[in-house]
Length: 636
Image (cartoon, rainbow, N blue to C red):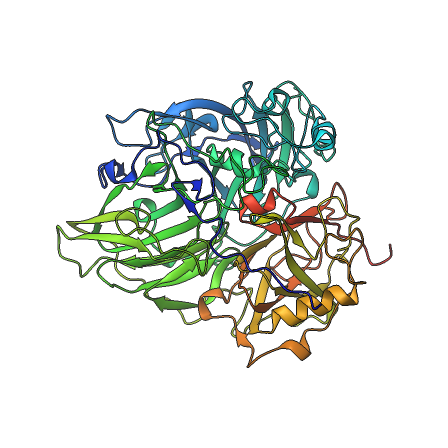
């Protein structure tokens, strides 16, 4: 019999963050009872306060920080709703607009790093969460496992313990490690999934930062900041529990600026100060007591008792506040948009239909500015837009809307009164910045044509996204049919360019993210993915994935349909996360060298534990949709 793909569409869609196939909790907060536009966004988040290190001549050598991961309560819902217990980042910060010291603060999302191109940043990340995890840790997944209980629990098999209490030795201690998403950094400071550390001093196999910290519950990371100015973000990345660590609140912005107008002639033209606002969009479900809800019953409880393929919350947060309002002047704002959700995509538009201009994405400015009326952003992606309120009458309320389905792209539409709304902008009568006169071409590291990577392609890799199905839905999701602990099969050479041809026969759009590199999207094309997948399996001995070694590649050309579509204008920039749609093949060019055109990074990219590539739907990443890769030297 021919092999057939089981298409996953809606059996595991969620309602209120809970599986439709699992018992629905009775104490969830009805999102319709949460007042909208009561919380107020007053401007950009605070910024971390650095210790400035100078040499004997007074030249700045680095900006150094100590940032702790801590547990605390925060008013996320409007008062008088209860405060919410979160995990977030803590340290000394200043007001982003006035520079006034704020003292020691704790917040989720964390304060922003204000980094300067050419000035390195050193961060001492401290795990100060000496408590049990607030969510159910599923020890049947391949995870950090500080107490080494995974094998025993899997071998004992079902029935697994219900949560609560679950498995106490999985709940404590909590492994954490911070990843600078989009950063060009050595793998010893990348915050990879095995580089975790706990409050009581346990370390993962990938824990060896370049410089040893003075305490066992910390890591010292070095960020060179040599790449072009862009919007980065930092978040937890511990193996197998990233979804619940980020859900707890462990994320924040890292804004890299370039003060040199010769290498960044665009930023001086753009709005600054209170008109330059990072906005992280996240979805959450709340219990009646104000706490976060997360699934505790999985789809296939006899395999993974607590793991759900995707989490979709019932309420929307922006910068840590549910459905906030922001008063805006009659002028242009630079909004730095980040989808910080576990799995939810957002198709954004404004309620008055006004257009907006997309100017940048993950790795910096686009080739050219693009005017749109809607934009879809996936988990992990960043887009910078210019929103012009100049012609909007004072007193007008403009709502940023969301129309993306869940799961994306063919699931359920958002609820119009809840997840279909993001943030409200109330227009004041005050004048704001005028619309900047932007040149046709924005990014000197792209040029006038796209894709601009003209290097000879040293290797083409054809890779396949795979869902392994169980009785009730996915058991795990794989990259190229391999699990996380299969031998490393991607070993690109330093300084080379590779073409990755990625086939998606699943029913989801997967946002695929590569650490270390930025890449350019070449094309997408429809294809007969059912026939391709079946023939790919037959080519590999008729054995269903997972595979322990890299599978034999199958050319895509005989299965293609129609014409290849070039990257749309709003994707024609340097990317580190890309949407790979179902039924399509996506082609990207990956340059394993700095995007400024130089041939080597200001560090040894071949040294350390190596890097990873993965799906940025965090629930997928935590269940095998992540693979290691190692950068090699041509003479190795």
